[in-house]
Length: 283
Image (cartoon, rainbow, N blue to C red; front, side):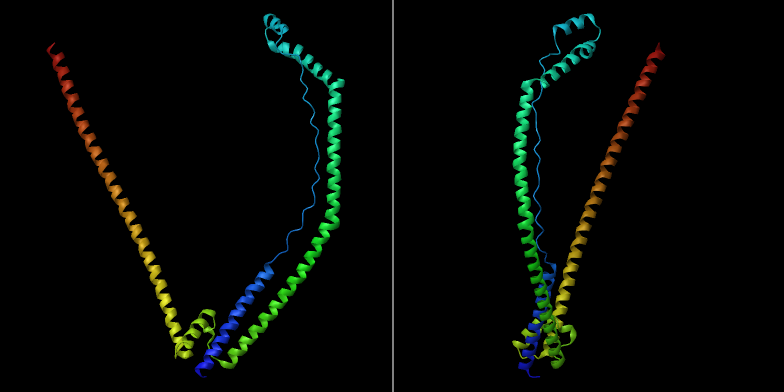
């Protein structure tokens, strides 16, 4: 096969291989796609009535309590026997008063009004959701599913046709062994034979040397990294040994100082004991 024929054959193989990789990527993307999530239905809120807090005018501290403190041993007796019943009675009186009932009635009417507005809005939103939103969603989803199925089918067809075309090219030309049919290898070999007088055999030899250089460089980088790591570990180990030796020296000095202090103390005690003994011995 002439050089020009080799160039054209490798170029075609590179184009077909690139198309195959692109089609595989597209096919994987189509299969991974998902239609948007189903819209959530409207929520139905409930209005809660908050009634006015009932406050009694009866106070715990009163003249009666002062008298109770004088004549009774425990103020709690006043609380449970006098104040608490009167306070609860007053609370109940206020609760049953016309004024308080009217306040509660007005609140109930306002709550009912707001709840009706919410109920009407919810009913309208629910109708919109069931009759418009969901049907539109299901229609769009069905169309999307049909489209994605067609895209997947078309992609599979293009991929199969391209693979068959590439296989036919290799079978008819026999230009490259199996291990040199990757995109990287095809690009290197094509650029080599296109821009020089090398044939495919020579380009393959250059590609093998290129791979070996890349491998050697990677091994060298890994070795340099390992050496740097070892140097760092050795430095840390040396620093640790130095720190340990420094600590041992400080401990040794401290021990010597303590031994000297103990010796001085012993001498001082001996001299003191001797002086005391001589003093009392003379007597």
